[in-house]
Image (tube, rainbow, N blue to C red; front, top):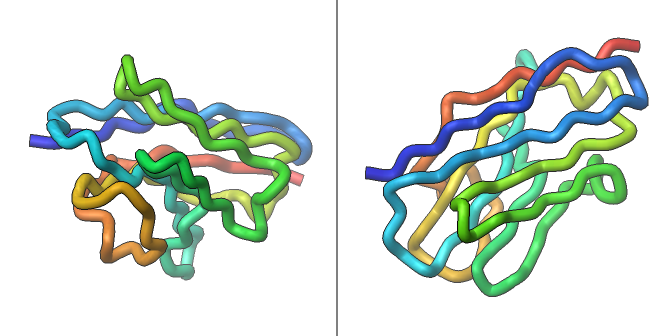
Length: 124
C-alpha cells in the first residue's frame, strides 16, 4: 500500500526558509501527480504546489516565486523548498499523491493518498 511521510517542518522567523520532504513508498505506477497541501486553523485545505509525471508544475498565487517543488524519483522523494516565509504561511503541510494519471487536478478530492502532516510556524 502507498505511504507518504512528511518531515522538515518547524518554527522560523519571517523571511526564513524551510525545506519539506515527503518520502513515498508502495507506489507501482509510473504516472503520478504529487503535491503539497496546507491547512491553516479555520481554513480549508489549499493546494500549495504540485508536480506531475508529464513534467508540469503548479503553484498557488500566494507562494509563486517563493516556493519551489522538486522530486528525486530514484529516491521516491518529494521536496518543497520554502523561502521568504511569511506569517500567513503558517499551517499544517501535507504531502499528497494521485497515481491515476500523468497530470494534476487541483481539488483535494483528486488525491487519495495523504501523509500525516508537518507543522510550519512562521513568526513575525
